[in-house]
Image (cartoon, rainbow, N blue to C red; front, side):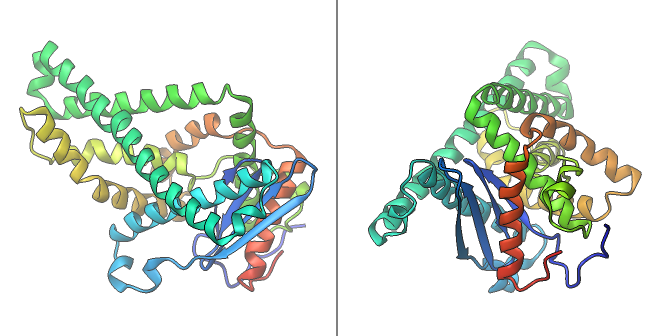
Length: 312
């Protein structure tokens, strides 16, 4: 039975992330991780996490808030993955110890640094190098900077598609993609004001416009537009440095576009804008089974409960 939308609603409801055999749901002041143990039990972790945007007015400004959200999402994502991995190997109690938490924090910092380095190489250095080679081979590319940036953007999309397609062949990653689908279906159930049951969640689409996959596409699209106003440079390394320097602005702008697209997704122009991102989710999500939906719904319910919001 359909219910009226809940009041008060969280701004853009809750966000989430698939982890190993589970789902993390993030509400304004907490994040909840629910994981299915090898024995079939539901294990949960909840921690308070208040965004820096709640304390500093400057960080709530458009464009800046997107940069903050990106960094904070990476931090929470690592913590959630660490917990799910600990449950998977039967050591969830160990990660709660003080010295272990410090160790995980150190590894977390190294993980973020490593991720940034790999991302910069795959999605900045390599695409720009390909565009440079095209520019040297074809004068028309050198003469038209927009075409140069389009080649850069298409290379990024190609690398992303190849990477996702490759890792989806791994059995464990395929299950994570199923939990990704369960996360989306659960959030849709809540946003439509339906009772949070497996039966209702099963009927929902596994594609969601606020997904990180859509965000990545928007980042690539935005970068093509932003780079057209970044002055060209004959020195490859200086050009690369200038493009890395504007990454925070691109991330912030993409975040604003993502928020607007979720709010006005019924408009034809917006639907056209988010369509490629939704299409890419065919690669990063899979249809979940009922057990996986149960895990995602458990995480969502606990997120609403700890925020003292009504649970449908």
